[in-house]
Image (cartoon, rainbow, N blue to C red):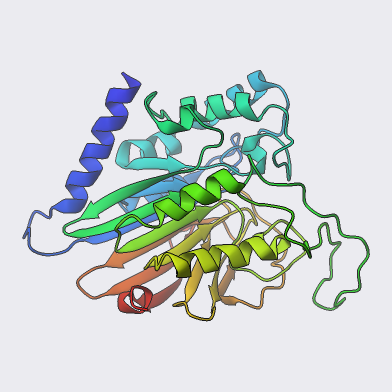
Length: 350
């Protein structure tokens, strides 16, 4: 029954993206909403607001609950309390839900490949998000996957990375000299200076290379931790700079047009913009704070919008007719806090 429901919802999504009631020749606006960091025992009005936007899909980017346990009964019970929320049910009834995980719903704060319950946690994740039994995630390690949504003759690929199952331990901060003005807080981690560590693991890297070869007009890569920021002493791709560079080089080598990152984790919202030789601008839109908040935003030389410290969700609007990608953050009051607009053509031409 779960498999049939999932396939029905996907069919409805593809139909709704492919047609418009007024004129089938008019390209619709594709809307992808997203967010992260929601505590399962708090109200989540942000999800109801996201449902009102009528997105074509909602992407949960991790810390979907705060499990933080080695007891799988505890993890399952926390998921159950979250899914029972009327706000979650309203969102689920309005659109297709896609998801990846971060550390707190994977199982333990800042954990990576050494988390001992990762396979049991994965089984619960696949059940919670009603992944069909025929899905390839059941037959291989990790939960990385991709989807292709159609909007008329346009295709949007959503790639969801797994930044936990294969990730090596973070390198502890060892008292290296830093800018004490920029870093007014205790640092936890320091970037690797060699290439003998990984975020994704070789199997996932190989899969990603093939995924980027699929035809698509726009590609949304969901990463639980921020991809586009500069070093801040916390968790981020910046702690694995060789992996960050590998990603950019892979996009370039595959000539993968239209890549935009969405990310979570940090309990505030911002947009980062990465300029890399031989590539179009690479944006990373961070939406983090369905219920969680943070006292300050860390330094980020790539920040061009934000931070937004109040609870919120993110929204990508692809206006195919106007040739625009609109990157929005909408807060818990329903107010649009910022919109970063990029011409679609800039992201698809080399």
